[in-house]
Structure formats: C-alpha cells, structure tokens
Image (tube, rainbow, N blue to C red):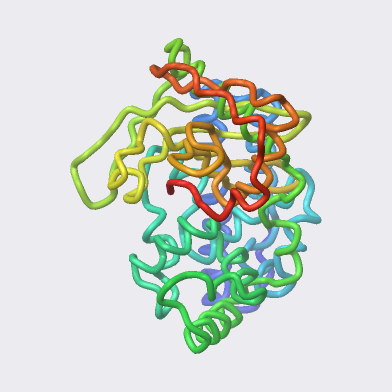
Length: 329
C-alpha cells in the first residue's frame, strides 16, 4: 500500500494524483498483456507485462518522481521492469502514450508521436519514425546526440539543438538510451526468417487479425499479426500500412518487424527489392549490404512472396558495387 508522506493537504493531493498516474500506467501495461494474449503471443511475454503492471501499481512513490530525480535507470532497477518496459513507461509519463499499446490496438499514430516536441509537427514526426525506426523520446534524444537526426530531410542543427534542450527540460534520460536502441546483434538471417514465417502463415490464413485504424480518417484494414520468439527475443510482425507503404501500393509486401523484450527493442522493415542485384528478393531496408552475402552463402535459396511465383536465383557472378543500384523503398 502506498504511504503518503507530506505536511500539507495540497502536497497530499498532488501525491495522490501522481499515484493515480501509477495506476493508469499499470492499467496500460495490463492492457498490453491482455492484447498480447488475444493475439496469441508467447506466455512468458504476457506474464512479463502483467508482472510489470503489478510492480507499478504497488509502487509506494510516484513513477514520475522516480524519472524526474533518478532517470530511467531507477525504473530498470525495479523488480520485473526491464530496459524495454522502462522505455515504454517513460513514454507514458512524458508523452502520455505507449507506442506498443498503440500498435496492439491497431492505431496508426506514429506520425503524431513526436509532434509534442516543439519544432516537430506531424510531417517531421512521421519522417523520423519512418526513416530512423525510433518511437520513444529517449531514442529521439539519442538520435539527436549521435547525429542520425541530421539525415532526416527538414531537420538542421538549430532544430536539433532545440530538440535536445526540450528533452533535457522534460528530464528525458541519456544514460540508459544506449541500452534501448535498435539491437545491432539481430542478424539479417533472423529478420528474414521471421518475415518468411509471417508471409507463409498469412498465406495459410492461420494468423489473428487486428483492425488497423488510420489516424484522422475513417479508413481501416484488417491486418494479420504474428507474435513470435527467437531464443528469448520477442518479435511482432505485420504488414506496413504507413503513408509511404500506401502510396507505393506495398501494404501486402512491406512487413514491419518490432522487437521488444527485457534486453532491447528495435524496428525493421522487410521489402521486395525492385531492382539491383537482389531484384525480386526479400531484403531488410537499410541493411542491403548484409543481404547480399546472406543470399550468396545460402546459394540464393528462394523466398516466396505470398500469392506470387518463386523468385529467381541470383546470378553466379556478383558485382562488388551492386549495392549502389539501390532498392525499392
């Protein structure tokens, strides 16, 4: 039971409000667990979110105060709260939303997620999400600090400095960010294996579907979703319905993979290459150079596209600079 330690009624009221915020966050974590259960996710993953919800609900002090005074590392030190869940809790406190919960609910709100940061409207927010594959304020700060934000069209050094100042004022931590970035250790082989499994099960009609709502419109699509696990790494896969995928007519080709588990989280997009050395093959966007040796080492085994014929074998001769031709997407 939470204990209110204060000398005034006003302070007591404020602390009660903050403890109510704890309960609201706990309810969001519980909803994540329930949605994962409904979508046939791994039982261990479901229990992890239920356990985290219990920890936050029973916390004797406001989680916002922990973040303000000690940063995200204080959350990670709590029982049942790992790096990934700590990042989600920070998002709930700083922005009022949890990206994972949005996805599981079928809400397409990525382009509005960073719009609460001064200088980042919906359009720039969408570009950041789509090009850098980041979702949390901690990841945004890390991208601002390491220079990746400069790769996003429309963002210059002055805007980055304003973003850094804003996030610092909000108390967004920098220390744990290195632990909460896209995991580089996840191999292209593992990503493509999950993509292949997802599309095969889509073709078989064995996956649950979520109703994906397009933010700001009445449009909706029922999208198959796969929750899977590889040696303790938890993944979610679904067809992309971003604005860009819809414009390219690729909503049944581009597959987005999300990872969220105790150690790390990340996001990747797998597409069919439309030209270049890997034309007709599935590739991980942004990691094309790793896909070349992947297929070469496996003698260019076919990867099937749901509803399409097998892709052709790669040519025996490989061009060292084949990557310069680029890929679709």
